[in-house]
Image 1: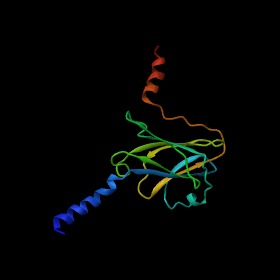
Image 2: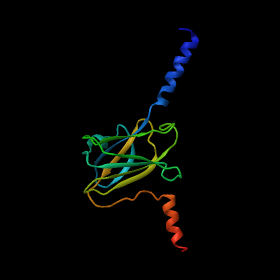
Image 3: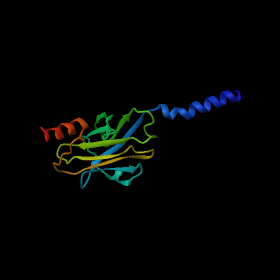
Length: 152
């Protein structure tokens, strides 16, 4: 191979990760209180927790911007693990914020607004028995309508 060809091949391999879709990964387990944390992949609470398969995990990208985007809802597997694709340019490298909410029948909801976890990190979602419900973050139009009524 010529030096130019080697250089081209190395450049293509370097750009390859940028072409793959970032996945927001996490695990849903029983907890003493409902909360969501960004943790390292090797956090011991991930392996010790009892999974909650019936939990629903909902994700919004850039929840406080005018351009927020619903990424979807997913359910964990038998181990409590889930992954949500984030098909945005530079996701996992550039700074994106997400709102994540988890709910399950018989459990209190949990939510968090945080930067997308980086390499070697994931979400640890702990749900406790209860009935506390979390609302989706206010949308700008909803907030405008509420405030407009004050002046009608």
